[in-house]
Image (cartoon, rainbow, N blue to C red; front, side):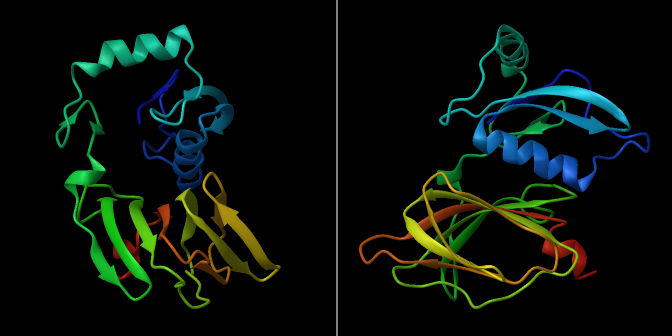
Length: 195
């Protein structure tokens, strides 16, 4: 996935704001064109995602052509790093398995962590919360249920769930024949909270 801002993402202090990061990542997943306010100025961003589609304006295509030669899988050039999901290994977790694509330990990120998680057949995790940490769960494949304080919500491929910091939630796989696969984005990453 590649995104290209018309004007930089930096705030007056020079760092990205958490909500801006989550907004941009959600845009990457959903393939949207949006306007956001960064550093008190409205900025327009074209955000697209490879396999999912998304806006493909001439400015967006031009930015990809201009930067493709400088982006190499697994290496960082001009602030971009590309990884291949199939080159990362899953680790077992109580409800299935997960692999880290980006994070302070696995991809050099400072403000977020991105995992691919597979919830095992008929499995999920207990209601829990993340104080001080926002989470986005984008369902890639399968069907499940997300439990919130407002009740159970059915989810399937294409569903995007935002969990506010400190909100109780849980996700379960309801299928009997395949895992529920999700892209999970957390900010700040858990590793930073433990320091």
